[in-house]
Length: 297
Image (cartoon, rainbow, N blue to C red):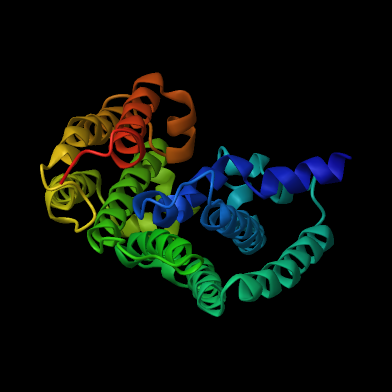
């Protein structure tokens, strides 16, 4: 049981929340329906497969980083770095997850399987090479989010999914990624590069500029989506969601720069009540506009 708990911890279940963007296709194409549940069920299957695939990536990444993690003030407590999870068990688990994931992904959709393969290859490149290259490391993380969204689109038949959502996903992922790098740099201070080599290519002022640029463009892109997407009401009622998006972006920046958070964005999402409320209100407003009120065009 101890080994199984260690394996589950290495799989990072708290980070599975990132895979929820797989559901963007079924939600924003307005295919949530009790009477026609197939699109939702297929999307949920895709979500589970991405959770398995991302957990495989986390296991491989921890295997690659085992020595660096042992020198990190927090990561040294990870199961592989601390020795509570034997390396052979981790290798076997990663292999089993891959054997299970890809055949089911292909059964759901060949295109979805291709997206899964691209996601896995991208993350292998990240683990062994890209994560050491400034800027490109965060761009590759953003690409992973876009692939998740694309997978969610391909696993169902989508009619009116706006390409603006790919742009917003990319920018929001960059925003979170640069915030994470800033938090790591602030936490590790002078010893940052000994724990994560890529941090040698960043400074806090540079990351603050990146955050300013990306947060601004995220707001602009999302605002453009709310009144240009083809499947939205022509009375632009979707713009009512903009204040919640604004607050969420500003709140995250506040947590990163004032509260010195952001090292694990998923932890902030699961612990910061104001951020949770803003996301909940945004999601509720989207749901009401798409599925309840049916505002006339």
